[in-house]
Image 1: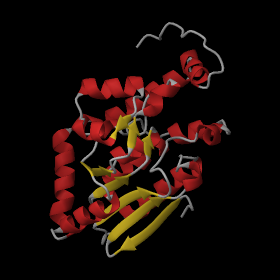
Image 2: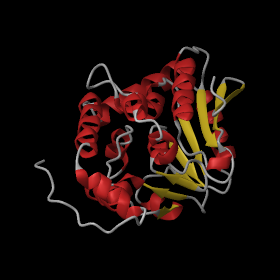
Image 3: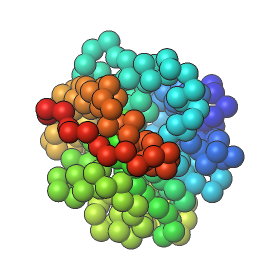
Image 4: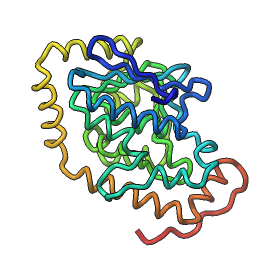
Length: 266
């Protein structure tokens, strides 16, 4: 198991902890692989009753470590490659994989929960944040779209106009604002303890009924996950092959202030 992700157990509840506090738990390739391997291991554990996801240090996850990931040109392919369009690629699996676990998954959020960090949290069933937490669909800041599977959850908890506004602007939200927009389940001073309390309450019920409820309600709220995962990847690839994404990055890094080119035909 990767050192980027700690996995321990308290009874039959898995405690999954992002472990890169010196980099604000920013996502590098080792963390992507660590989360993937952790989710796959948990999926095989029939006695598992719940998962609590958290992050070490000052922040839950500040998003993608762009310098680290882009230092190797092959990393983009490793993140976006998939055998079938409707299957999650590596970038999507670290979010969508939590949705596939037949147990409740709670994320305890604090500090920054930006970009890829929020996408991962959106893969969990319940999101609890401290009052001081900051949340953002940050990808638009770099001329990208959110392509890590978080769109699946956004359909369930937000109206389309609010989701589009947040994704288009990369606006940073306070925990209170995120709760009002239904991005969060609760705001709590101690989200880790509150998350354990929720999981222990659910664990008093039959594991079969809990698993069935999760699967039933996901299917009742939507039915085209494969189509959305395919379009996330296809649209991102189109963006990455255009000039406007590079212009957006240069403008954000204040390297220049070039005007954007006319958009592609969408």
